[in-house]
Image (cartoon, rainbow over all chains, first blue to last red; front, side, top):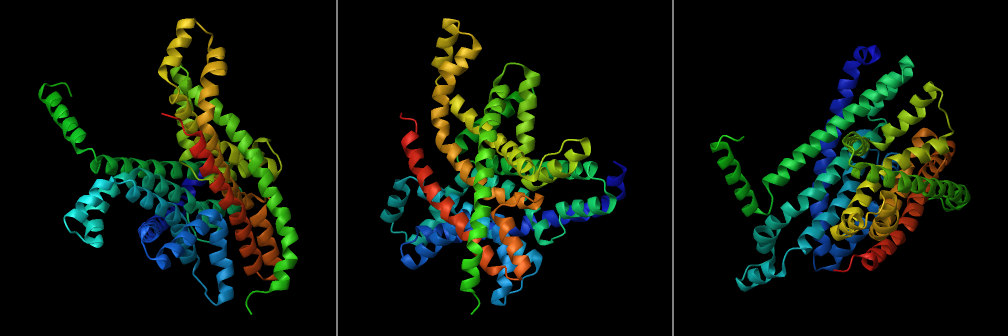
Length: 233
Length: 218
């Protein structure tokens, strides 16, 4: 274990890089998901088709292959990305393609009556989407989007393979210099587990906060208050 | 011209060989995941708290850690304790264990989908547990599991590229080796990506159709 304490600063830096990559590619993922998900639902074919092709290509080819492609193959087109940029782009686009289907599914699953009511009220498509459909779809998206974010967090470990100095990369470095393997790898295994547990917890909180079933939520709160007043909890 | 067609054609045979390894490791991994996942799902349902809690924790832990780090652990840590296997076997076992945690959840939903009346009937008839599981519950539960198993099979097919990091010479590792020895990454990596797409896209279409067919009728 001593090797872990000795090299703790390195692991700490790696942890920050991992968190940074997660946050940046998480942002890319959400932006891409909404853009592609809604483009796929739109009427003009020149929006629908490219979104469909994008989603199927990024879901159908492996994430690591995409990352390597961004890192090794793009320079042949004269585009040289920093490892960090390539990694964040690949991760964000890949997970974004999965998330786009979540966005699409959640929007499609809204009751038809909502759209019909909007039309009856004379709302335009943009207003309808912004004020009625999306606010209802987002709570429905949260659980699967949360899964995708946890997945994204775990997949950040792959950025170590394109020389981004994240947690996994630092662990490999420490292993190479000290020859100590067990302690280092088990430590980062636990660190990743803690990170994804925290993320799962935060997503769970968001889900409860924004749950669609507001009646059940207020009923739950009232019950808790009554219990507290009765001195049970 | 950026794309070198002759070079692209010349690397295809090697890449197809890599693809074969990818397919083999996926099938072996699926077999391990299917068996181990079922074991985890049953252990989790047992009425022995220590066992079911341990199984739950194992599932959550495996799902909460990256496949790459798990692969490193198996590949670098285990040999220090005298357990060593070649990269292919290690890779298949690691990815099999990784997906068994997801499969366990799939089995769980399948098992929970079996009507409670079936359990009650079994208890009323006084059937022993092995027969309850083997003859009544699993045959009904597995029917619902089939399409999900297909989804994870496709997912595993794509994820197996990660195993190139522990020197499994599958499709991506082959493409990379060709790239580094010829100083041309564009063609091998692009073809590798296309090969992945060529298999996973039609397969997921097929699984979608299966999903509709096997969906429980209500």
